[in-house]
Length: 225
Ligand code: CMP
Image (cartoon, helix red, strand yellow):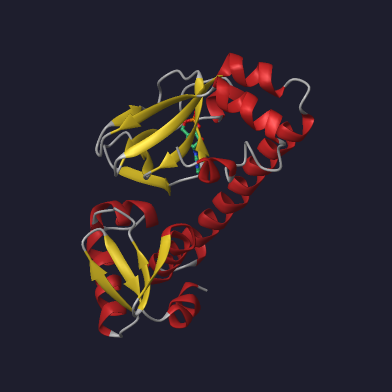
């Protein structure tokens, strides 16, 4: 297991070796194949997870069957805590979009471990606050930004988390189909494809299967504003 990746997770941030080891002892490792669903929106939940490797999508369905992606998350990120801290059904369906390795922590073990460790509780609060900040930005973008702006912003966000240097730019292996990318920015596939084709024609990015190479970060950033 890549312990350094796990240490980046908000649950572990700033913890001493004793607290980290105690937490790791309580966590159970599991793997998922691409396309498998870990749990569905509406299920009851009793575990939170930290991603060790791979990527997952968090999706919600409207009553008419349309899908919306809340986020794509990867190594070091935590999820599944909402239905533990605010007991209730899972708020999203979680699906592996690549091979995934996870560490799971049960509600009971989380409570045992957190009691007497106020710093760890603060880490969790900080992670939740950061997520709310990000969600507020996304809601604002849905109201104030056009689709190309939202596509540019989503790609830059994915680049920040998953980007790797390539010969001519930044490779973002987001693992999403164009349909899923459209679900992530809250627009139709046609409009998102048009925006991507336009960015590609301008030389700002290159499209690859389930990935893009961002060639001109500066122009992408100004389009995202
Ligand atoms: P839970 O509701 O237990 O299961 C789905 C998880 O998705 C949820 O906990 C959060 O961890 C995560 N989640 C829900 N909404 C968002 C969001 N807007 N951004 C990122 N993650 C989210």
